[in-house]
Amino acid sequence: MKLTVKCLVAAAMMLYCATSFASGGGIRIRNLASEQNIVEISSARKYLMLPVQDNAPEGKVFIVDADACHYGPAMNIRLARERIDYYVPLDLSAFMGKSVKIDVQGVPAGSVCWKHISLSDTFEIPTGGHWRPAIHHTPPYGWMNDPNGMFFKDGEYHLYYQHNPYGSIWGNMHWGHSVSTDLIHWRHEPVAIAPDAWGTVFSGSCVVDYENTAGFGAGAVIAIYTSSKTTQWGTAQMQSIAYSTDNGRTFTKYSGNPVLTSSERDFRDPKVFWYESGKHWVMILAVGQRMQIFNSPNLKDWKHVSDFGLKQGAHGGVWECPALFELPVQGTDRKKWVLICNVNPGGPFGGSAAQYFVGTFNGKEFVNESPAVTKWLDWGKDNYATVTWHNVKDRTVALGWMSNWQYQAVLPESRFRGSNTIPRELSLYEEDGETYIAAVPVRELEEASVEVLEKDNFNVSGRDVVVDGFADKDAGAYLIDIVIRPGRAGRVEFSLMNSKDEKADFKYDVEKGLFMMDRSASGKTDFSVNFPAFTVAPAENSGELVLKILVDRASIEVFGNGGKFAMTNLVFPAEPYDRISFGGTYGNYTVKSLDVYSIR
Ligand code: FRU
Image (tube, rainbow, N blue to C red):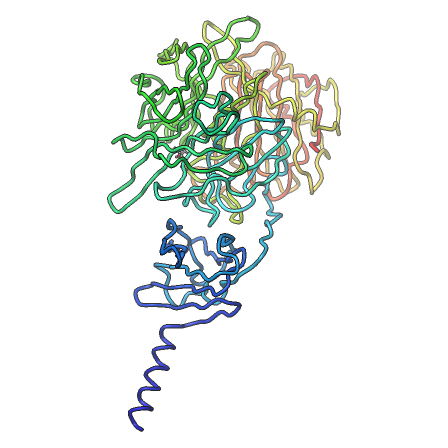
């Protein structure tokens, strides 16, 4: 009798220790020793909602398909320990109605997440967020960095991106996906490519294989991306492919992956295009501090044909995310090849930035025509990983990640992190014997704009001139066109301001031909010592300074003199800037025109 009671107590204790919490709704949590846990689901619904705490250490989460005795790839998730910042959905749709187990490692038994994990058939994309851009592309939730795989087909622009669907900090790289018919309004699509046995899915590109060179069907969309595999011995990178026969909605991984390997540690970000004169594919790949070029007849078999980069351009950090394409030279019928090479760190104002080279390409080798000059695509702090759209026939459209690796992880938004620049049309112009890129917003931006303010010809001298009321409290994005005639003024100064005395300051040093932006008083800046910044662009005085300034809730992009310089900087004002103040202290100048457009 005594023995039985003892046994019962022991059995009850064992049960208590092993099952610290049964959260109901078909979920049973079994907390084991050593921060190991099993989430048992008797009948899966579409999503398992996971509570996340951004500053908790990462735990490892594996879906275990009991029937196939198969472990899915590990997701590193910061499951909530003390407080819940937000929830992320783990997709269980492959197990609907069936039992499934989730193995969770590295999360203590007492963590708050265990009480709040639940099953759901829906996940509502969070809206709002004080600084969520009105017209710039952002992920629905979670983290975003580089744009990937952009292509155009059948009237649709596709944009994939480096995405962590399980938190607002980098990790678990997937390809998120959005689609647009005008490059301005974006629709979120389900995640397109997820990690597998070869690792997480790093940056890469897509091509439309019209000739069926790869054998996945004529017109199939082929994604070429880096599989990045991190183990206890370190990271290895290789190139893999996946194909889509539904215009980029869903992808099937190629069974012969990986298609290109190397013993180099940094071996990533393939940008692929069809080289018509040689009738073959070309891949340009970032390898440490150089680029490697490969050729292929079929996207599967690749041959190394050249290296580029020694003693060329900026080498302050690792080279990443290349793009290689031909551009027309304005005012001529010539074209030149351009190689975009993103570098991190080593940008002109610290952290990450995009440089480029202009020259020739013969299908195998790129030759930089002016090795002594370093050229930057943007003179702000927040334009990185810029690459181009494939298959846009009549123009070259590029897009960057509007941020900087110096502070992206601490930007003051946590429900989503990351946005893109406005898509930009690129061309080349010649000045003083050099050839440079001009970048302007795509024409679709103007097509979506409505004029809300027009002012002509006013003088600024002695006193500041304030033009106000052009944005209300709920202002989304707006575009300002300004034409300034500096005359004999040594300096032109103006600021975008709000009623909280927050301001983005702009200065034009007429003699030196320098355009500057200072965001140190622009709003919230204290989240990183690298955020307050003063950025400078060369802007020769030709009698008129022509500016196009695109302002969204958390960004300012300046395009000067027809795109001869671009300057992109994030800002976090407490309320939208709704006035512009022209400074009069440095002499007499004329604002020939000032037009403000609100963007639909
Ligand atoms: C650039 C980058 C790429 C890499 C990706 C990983 O920002 O480091 O080189 O593929 O991000 O997310």
